[in-house]
Image (cartoon, rainbow, N blue to C red; front, side):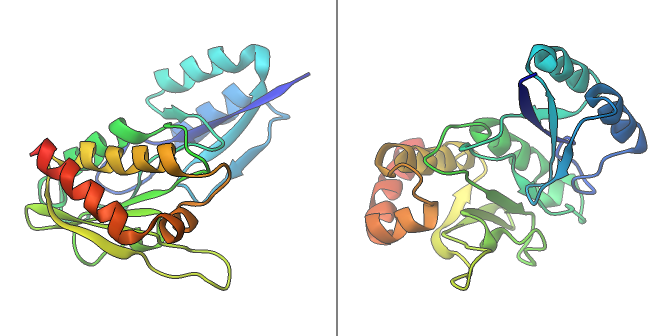
Length: 212
């Protein structure tokens, strides 16, 4: 019988990506005794289910209050810090709005976007393809973080002082640029090296001005 995978994560909230015991029981029950459930580095569980049962499983997971996303070459759900200073100070709504704007978008290669609600950057956003760091009332955007291989390194600063209003559309426009000009299976950091940081910055500054 053919299988399909569903990426499952808790809602973005203060405290971080926390599954409750009820969540885990529900996931196990919905997936079944023989299912494979993988813990990924994307703050999600990837659940394998039968193709014929996938839609019903998805609806049951959503009813449980969980988020269900696609797997593969898409933008993964936003990876967030614990928002330890509280929802308002660390920008809970901003994080949720960014996630809503970008999650599941098709990309040349799977893409990770990270968010931290203060300059401590506890969520390690600088190791993501796109990293968002809240600084007081605005956001700094880093791109090109690479957590794997011997070439691992932190991202470079692309833009400072992006407002909360501008943030979701700005990040989406950055991803759109990658969609339009990235090569098949080309990782985002490789795209940056080929396309050029300054070229990206020039196009995004124009986009930022148009959003503002």
